[in-house]
Image (tube, rainbow, N blue to C red; front, side, top):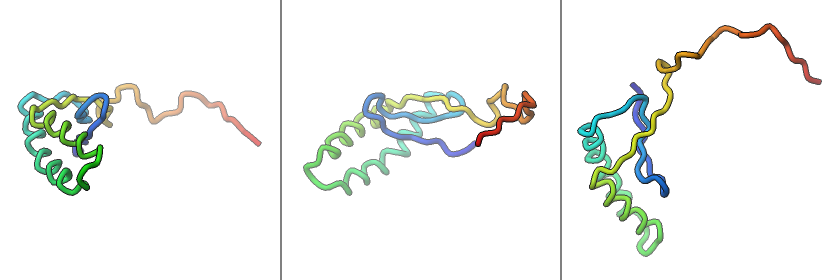
Amino acid sequence: MKSLRLHWDIRHGWLIDVPFGLSEAAIQRIAQWALPHQIQRLRSLPPGTHRREQLRWALRQLEAGKIRQRLTPSEQAMPFASNQRMTNRRYFYG
């Protein structure tokens, strides 16, 4: 399995792109892993910025383990993908 992508969306909160659904325990472990990295990111932002306040709010969401899963297609999960052509038509432009 490829690495999972955890990112922040202002409308939807924390999102993780996964090829299949994860258990609640796995989501909590991901939140515990990501929290120190995001705290370090907060410390590196300049004081008084709007982004800093947004990140503080996002960190509270992450501490609570509020991560939504978004299923993304994987190479194994594409039952209708085909490597054969469906038609012999050729289109020429020019």
